[in-house]
Length: 154
Length: 218
Image (cartoon, rainbow over all chains, first blue to last red; front, side):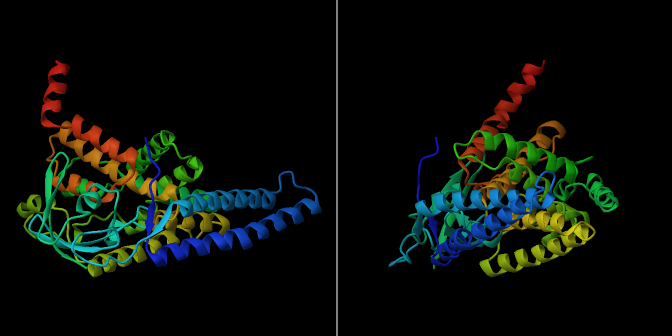
């Protein structure tokens, strides 16, 4: 069962999302509604591809507004950690794993992008690293066990 | 119509392009990009059905179908491409580890790959009508940026499908299952459905489970 949990955001990331929400609600929604109205007033809406496209666009906008609203109700800004004694959401962690160095920033699930080094706080590795201090190790178990040693917290 | 047919024929080339990772690890007759995309689409659709949150299924499927279109010209990439040792005997040791890098290197690689793939996709879409071009590009950008929940889910399903395929090759063709499949997945997956799927894969593909399955065959 999926429980309600906060979704962590960087300040910049949350601002971007709020901006998108505002643009959709105050501008995009009205623009497409106006377009639909104009086409209706022109008549001939049956088999009118422009009308279908506008309806589709409206649906897309409304779905995105709903999605953003849901995310924003659960959004929590990552506060910069006062101390860097343990890994928290928002921290950049330098680790040693399998004899090599790696670097991740722990973020919320919406902003996570492992290819860019942004690991979700809800991924097995993200969860394991939270609360770990420098020179401490954590083991992430699956079919194999992988040990991560925290070398630095930025 | 002519432009659409030309587009379909170009996309059809993906049937002949194998997923590169399988070639590197020695799979004979590996799955093509089309086969991979089909399975990702199917998995995304059915796994999303199990979630409490309602997904836009049409968007989900379109993203799954569009996510690797760029590979018609960009080809398939693996994270090992730029670090492969000349001696193939050293490859297994490399493949057992998940590639590591500092943040700035990761971002640089990401931007380079993204640039190449976008260029490739734009070339593929160039003959299509403006609305279609816009739509497919928007779906692909969503997949890359993870803007919507559908895109983020397909991206993670993509990873689970690849893990599952690696395990299946291990079972059917006795191809070594490298540790990196698991390690990378534990860093990339956070969706509860897909974490559950990963757990089932762990149980199903332990050496003990595989032995039992083989015995039951007889």
